[in-house]
Length: 176
Image 1 (cartoon, rainbow, N blue to C red):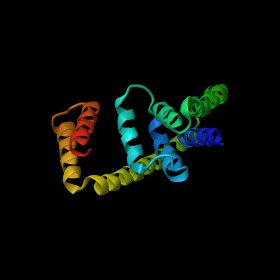
Image 2 (cartoon, helix red, strand yellow; image 1 turned 120 degrees about the vertical axis):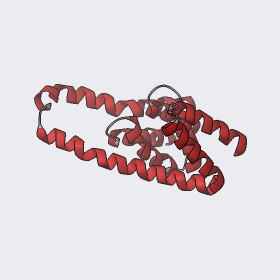
Image 3 (cartoon, rainbow, N blue to C red; image 1 turned 90 degrees about the vertical axis):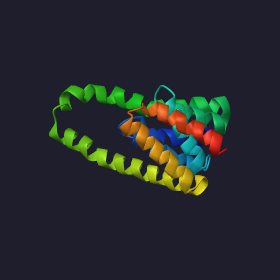
């Protein structure tokens, strides 16, 4: 039963996550944290931070890790298959229609309409992470990390991956 739950959690998340890996994150978070309770929101946030630093598609990294944590190697393989399967099926089916509808105003309107929904879902996820960080870390650490992140990103123009690594190091030293 656990393997079916792993498959369904990642299949439905990636089926509904139109636009790639970042758009699936709120759906994966809902399944993993809220529905099946395999992780806490704090653990999911840590996983998301580490997955952002590593190279490759974020959805497969998160799926592989969560699948392995919940169901071992079979769980990892099932989560990876469920993550990749919706896109593979869509590409196979939609490839036949790409030339037929590539200039359609309805298709352009549809894709443009989905983008604000994804932005709202990512905003809600960021808000939840903010509240969790505030509750677990306290206002002082949250303000230090926010100010340092803003300064490094916008004023000094440091690459976001380095900022994430620095934040992970800060958390490892001061918040462990």
